[in-house]
Length: 197
DNA sequence: AGTGAGATGGCCT
DNA sequence: GGCCATCTCACTA
Image (cartoon, rainbow, N blue to C red; front, side, top):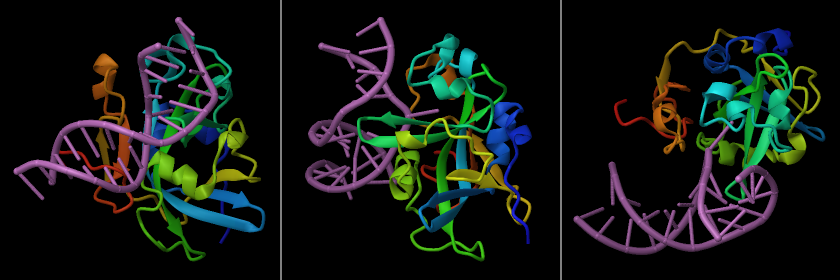
C-alpha cells in the first residue's frame, strides 16, 4: 500500500481545519537509517496576525519566527522554557504566519499499530525530546519526505474529535478561551484532558 | 487528585 | 531583566 505524503495543498487551507484533519495522520521522522512513525492525536491552531497567543501576532517578524512566514508545509520549531522544543507545521500561504502545534502522538510499528509507552510523546516537549527534534529541524519543507513529513493515514482518521481551550496560554485575554485545541477523545496519548470531558 | 516550585536559556524590550 | 505554546517531582490531603 502506497503512503501518500501530505502535499502543500493540504496545508494551504484554514488553519483550524488543518489542525483538526491532522489528527489520525502519520508523523514520520527519519534519523539516519531509522524511520519513526507516529499517529498524531493532539494539535493546536495558532492564528497568526489576529491571535495574541501566536508568536507572529500583529505580524511580528523576528529571527525566531521567520519560519512561520513560509508557505504551508514548512516546519517551525522553537525552544521553550530553556529546555524543550515544540514542533509546528506552518499553514496558509507565504506571509500568512499561521501554524499548527503538534502536541501529542503515539508511536506505531510497521503495521501502524501502537507500540511502547503510549505517553512517551504525550506533550509537545516530550514529543520533540523523544524524537530528537531541535531547532535544526525548523524551516524544513515537510512535503519532500526527507527528514520530517506527514503521511495520509492508511485508514480514515478517527472522527471522534474533541476541541478545547489551548494549553499554557493563560494571560492572553479572550484568546485563552478560543477552542483551538483538538484531540482524539479519551486517547491515552493525549497530553492533558479537559476538566469537562 | 490537585497544587507549587524548580530547572534552564534564548528571545525581546 | 522578565517572560515563556513545558515537564517532573515533591508535597498536601
